[in-house]
Image (cartoon, rainbow, N blue to C red; front, side):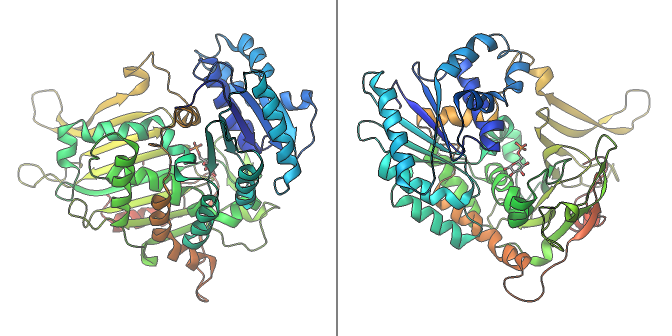
Length: 493
Ligand code: BG6
């Protein structure tokens, strides 16, 4: 556990992630009184900024806090306190002097707090500087008088080998115990609920296996394109951007066996075990897409991927991917796990859909299958599609559902943002919802062969993605693809 007082240093303080996610989450925790009493927030980045400009950046993503019914209550009063607790230092990521200045600054802050020193370093940085920064911090800013923690953001490498290199380079200076690898999907409320849903309900636990389940779909849909991140995106593509990490984490929590306890190592052991049962994805089980111009959800014209100036001409980088994973263990053998992710689609939605097998024929023919649906966002909900008799004299089965919408069922509950939940866990020293090194390694092994194929690394048969219009449901062949793996589509998915 961390002891008061403490400092959180956000490296990459002038960047987008810090603005949109890190600072608003730290402020939300601050507003709720969940951080140590004398917490100090220090921004670090290359950009030279005076205090005024830093405060502007620091607070420019706080709109969400202002709109939140709970956080809006003490917003103004806490904002002033938060600003007073925050300072900024500029410096390079690959030279000692900036880090030394940062260290001096932290010592000054700590001397006002009786010299006690616990430091949390949050790397909201591009992957190219992770290793240098981890080294520079260890050499110049690591405190010997207290606890040190390093929070690292994805992407953790680009394939098995580069991920291994990155892990071992950070490990030269930081122990696994000091390292917190964020995959923010693990902080999402519905993903955290999966453990309870699965293992706290005997009827679900008892049917979540190959005897009852036909197929599972994990779907990620975003209604916007590269949004000015074309340069970054083209280097990674949709599979590295969301599938290998966010959707894979979702899959492992969904499919793992029951852990011995809720303890971090027990949970992560089970996740690693299930991932080890998944062979590398087969090229035949992959569908790739890239968006062309079209209209967004507001009916506004939007350019195609290749029209983004930051995207290299003629790029074949996929902005949509559907693929199938197989889990070779007694529970899941033969059940396809279909992963679908795309940018510039017709809606914003992340959903897990577990489709049961057909009811045994006999008195019913052609009635819809049961489905257990977990909506991760927006508007968390779980529903079970089932058949029910239409009220009236005749006996007629109609599809109906048991509906657990959080907004109705947990009306007064506030759902913390994923980053809030994770930063709080890191402060408490709880690793349960952070990615362990071996977990990362097995996840990369599943994706690396198809990624090398898509990158054109192995041979001349670099795949060409199928085009789809901005604002559509994705490539035209998507329905045929999911049907091939047993999915019966009877309404919107
Ligand atoms: C990020 C990806 O990790 O996750 C983005 O880099 C993506 O491309 C984002 O938009 C999705 O996160 P969320 O929480 O909005 O679903």
